[in-house]
Length: 102
Image 1: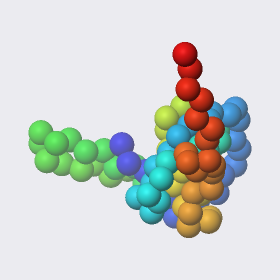
Image 2: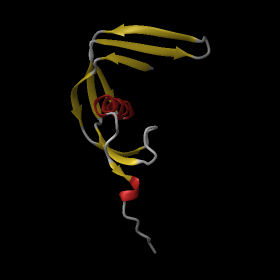
Image 3: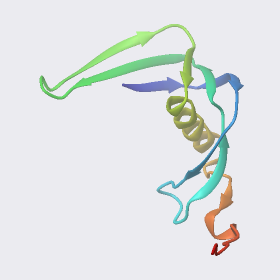
Image 4: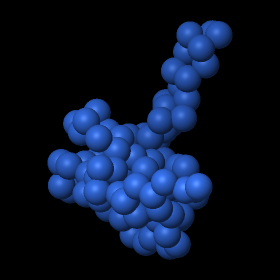
């Protein structure tokens, strides 16, 4: 499913997940902190569901805020950060300390 939010607003965020992300606008991966759960509302919310076998995209208008968990939550958080900042903030991979173990 794909969701389209017009003027999205984050209503709440819970939990923390640390993950490495690479975005098409950056050449390196970054360590970022994302919520495990996020609730988003908007002036207009549209849900698109793709049926590749029938080659049909079904569209549905949604009236309530949406809650996302896990992968959906950090994916939504990532895209909201693009809307708010245009770039993803985090610690670049090359800033990590490399330790050789015996």
